[in-house]
Structure formats: C-alpha cells, structure tokens
Amino acid sequence: MERTLVLIKPDAMQRGLAGEIIARLERRGLRIVAMRMLHMDEALARQHYAAHEGKAFFPGLLQFITSSPIIAAVFEGKNAVEIARQSMGATNPAQAAPGTIRGDLSIDTGRNLVHGSDSLEAAEKEIRLFFQEGEIFSYERSIDPWVFE
Ligand code: DAT
Ligand code: MG
Image 1 (cartoon, rainbow, N blue to C red):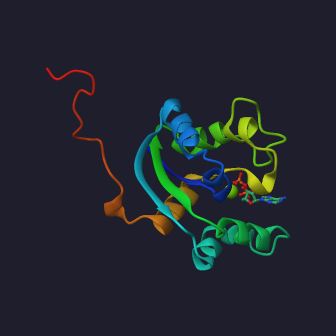
Image 2 (cartoon, protein in one colour):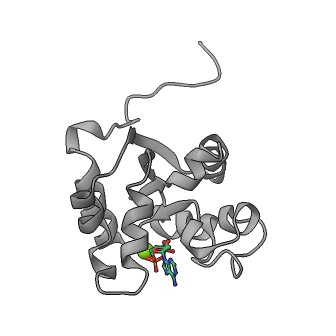
Image 3 (cartoon, rainbow, N blue to C red):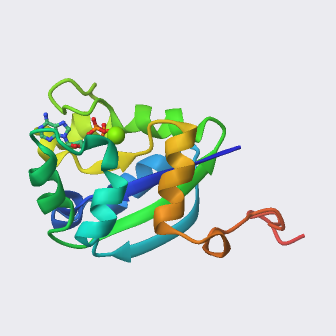
C-alpha cells in the first residue's frame, strides 16, 4: 500500500473542480486518508517545489501556488504514486491524454489543476510537509459498508 500527496491547486479551486478531481481519484480506486484546505505561504511553497528552484517558471509557480487556497490530500492504494500521476495526465495539458484530469479539464502547463508526488521518496517527503502522522487516518477497523448484518 502506497501513499501519495495530492494538491488541488488554486486554479481548480477557483473553477469549482475540487469535487470532480477528488471523485476521479476515488473512483479510480484510491482512498482518502488525509485532507485539509489551506493557503500555502512562500516558505511552504519553496520547500514543496525545491527541486524546481532556479528554473524560469519558478517565480511564477510560487506566485500561483500561494495566490489562493488549495486542498492538500493524501490518497492511499496499491501503486498510489503512479496511479495518481496517470489519472492526472502529463504536466503539459496539451500533451495529457483525454480521459485524464489535465487532458480533460485544462489547457496550460502553468494552470494544470493538480499536483501528484512523482516518486515514493517524494511522496513521503511531501506528505510530511503538509500533514503530521497523527492526521493521516486508517481504514483498518472498517466494517461492511453496504449492509448492517
Ligand atoms: P508535475 O506537476 O507534473 O510533477 P513538474 O514537477 O515538472 O510537473 O512541475 C511542477 C509544476 O510547475 C507543474 O505542475 C506546473 C509548473 N511548470 C512546470 N513546467 C512549467 C513550464 N514550462 N511553464 C510553466 N509552468 C511549469
Ligand atoms: Mg512534479
């Protein structure tokens, strides 16, 4: 079982696409184990996107991701990292396949709606930036969700 960090970015929040994005990931088979709405500050944005420091788009990326509230979530499931990335589609929506979140709902790389961790190591690091271990839930004691008896 893997965990991955998902961010529903400012553009998705402004466009009212949070529910759609969450629904797609849930329907794919990933389960929500943590979720919170927050407004990222510059320090958090710099940590989260540290790998992109120095790139031409970095200032614009920081400005955008800190511009308005987002939802941060942890999804879990078998191969969650790869599965979430595949459901999101390519970074550039112009190259993202139809049927993916980006391919169906966006047109510009700088406004591509969602973030998903790109490796297990990145996921562990990123999850720690947004959530404490005690804020990540478990379904281990869940009981039959369809019938009482
Ligand atoms: P991804 O979000 O698919 O992991 P990434 O890690 O390469 O993509 O880049 C992080 C984000 O930075 C990406 O979602 C959007 C933005 N970005 C990347 N390349 C860009 C570019 N050439 N122009 C504008 N924004 C870019
Ligand atoms: Mg990335």
